[in-house]
Image 1 (cartoon, helix red, strand yellow):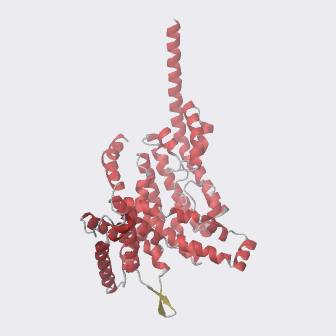
Image 2 (cartoon, helix red, strand yellow):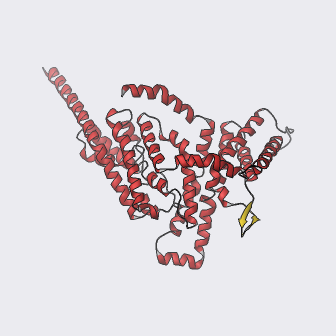
Image 3 (tube, helix red, strand yellow):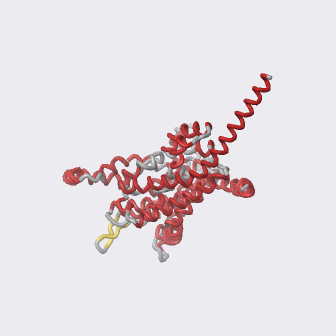
Length: 436
């Protein structure tokens, strides 16, 4: 274990630290996170419009209110690529010390230029913006456009290729006009790219990206097995002190694309293409990375050592809301050889439970339009998104996780109790010596 610890600290952690500081990675991470107010903001509407109460649903349909509620969901959660493109361009320009608004607006405009502007209809075509390209099918393409366009803008901006106006011009006006030459260059290049892609077998940029880049990534990354590998990797790196967000930021495009694809299919009344993947990911991080909720519920009641009794009481409430740093750093789980096996094995077991649940039809009732904050307790969220079967599956997983951790915790607790008793004996011996 000490050799593995040395390899992680000396070789892997520096590399992961550098990856997490790459400006493009940070831009993607921040850009994706910036869309969270949209999904969380309409979660109440999503719950109400899908509430399984027949009189309520009949009333919504009769009054036509459901149409407006679904429209609200559609233009927030189903066109994620649109919002992400702007926000990634925004944050990428901000990371490179250029105008973030300009980086975002140039990225978004380029996204629209490259997008097909006709919709197939009744054997022909009509002018319009196809939702297929601004939803799940546009996420990978949008990210690439945002990074390339905003980066090019920043490079040209740093070279001083801007319109310089007199000081008498108001700052806001000057800032708006200064990137004119840069915008001309960017849109000429983007237009040429559109023409070039139209001459290929793919016909447009987005079909090219989805076929050449997106499809292989989704085929490799959006499977139940890849989800299990992702969860195990998260637990291993968290054990060695590397925060899960580092790995999550790399995997985020896959998570976003699968989520939007499932949502689009669900809203259209079609089978969800990544339901098995979502079923496995439903068991990701029960109580925090490393799936510590099960043992968190036990520690306050089974601890014999005073230190773990106190820690158990203090860490229980945060653990229920998926915050397990008190255990990771207090037990500790991090770099503690006793807990390496349970941290990793619970991720594997949870992935298997997810696959079993999918095959048993537990997740056939999944409602992907309901987005919940990450602090939602693991045994409450499924009530809203899946139903009672999902709650039962999660509770089973939490119990199994607790049983996996139990023998390892009992060993750690025994060692801690021995240390406390040894310390008490030492104190007593000192007191006897002083009395004599």
